[in-house]
Length: 284
Length: 266
Image (cartoon, rainbow over all chains, first blue to last red; front, side, top):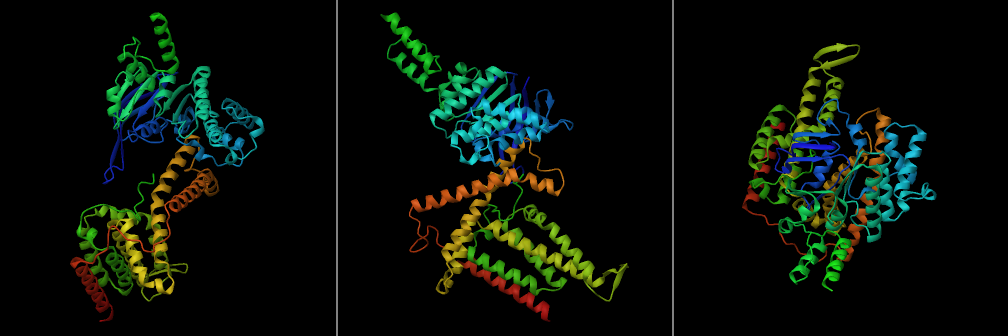
């Protein structure tokens, strides 16, 4: 078990007029090697939830177990947990600070107290994974384009070789090319290294394409939890929460209403195209 | 982590003090601070504490909130207290060791100074806790208006204050976010000596400065895009109006000042 939440509640500014319940009695389990998507309307508690994964926020009530260790135990080293649970925040490029790309990515591994050679090897490996070439290493991170900056920032977390990678809207504000690049790399990381990935996103298409399981947050509670097909079946509920199903599902539904006998449990454009083609062939 | 900072924070409530005109509150606070320096004995401060107590009660702000603001200046109170205790010369020596002496006079002034500082902070906290930043800057602009003739840019000063106040929560939030992001990369802001701690702030301060400049630039652009050109001919949605309760408040603060002067000089 990678992450286990038992009856976790988090209240901001408790005991003041600004009190806000961000998480309300959350129970979730995430298995090792799983690719989980978290969706929810703005303010549904997603960001608060993921900050509990590596102990940046402590629950007001309840227990969290990460990789077999209880986070509220005194002898659990939070530093170690934070190294094993890599957390990539929204707009991670805003955290860049070093003179060169290389040094910035080296910040995480250096804090782990690794040898110089090991740090160097990890930085190269991480930058390679996100597709930053060696001739860029000595450039200032502030000279890069938005997409490149973000990839450098993600490399900064990958260089720590986390066992669990948590990404908070890694594609927000990127152009389609930058978005595809980052998502492909995340998918490759999950497949080749077998690490657990948790992806927070507002794009139903991205979520549908990538993840094994979806957790839907609504007003600080887990509203739905299951495989993409079963979660997206509840279109009406999702719409009430300010979310939606992937667009292709709406198209398939409309086709069905018009009399084309297609399956409506289609999540990606590729699947949809195949389904329509096969139905059309049969009709001939 | 930064949610505990209360200096300059507004506490929304529906009280008589909240409803007073912000100009009256600013001037009253100013006079109150002068009164604190007029008073120089414990009788004066006794009356001041009763006065403050009544105002805090009327403002409906929990006393806990007022005292939270004191935490930040606790060290300053301690230092001034210590300086006064050890540095005041006097006749009533209570304790002496190798040239360091504590005198009765020293203790007396130390107590007086500490009380003065505490009242100063509480007095100004009442102003910020019961007046929203917008009302506050509107009030300051209105007070400064007559000085326009001698070249004080009242509107610009008020606008700069509004923006500065508006940016405090934004920058605090940003600091919190960057801190967490660096902590997720193993940064340690809490342990080590002074030099190590100062060094550990670099990963926090560099991104913070960059984002502050970026935000300032974006804001300037947005203001220009909406044809901002200063306060000329600008009207307000909420006009400041002096009502009966404001006259009463002004009378009360005048009586309080008179009492303070009488206690000192008679």
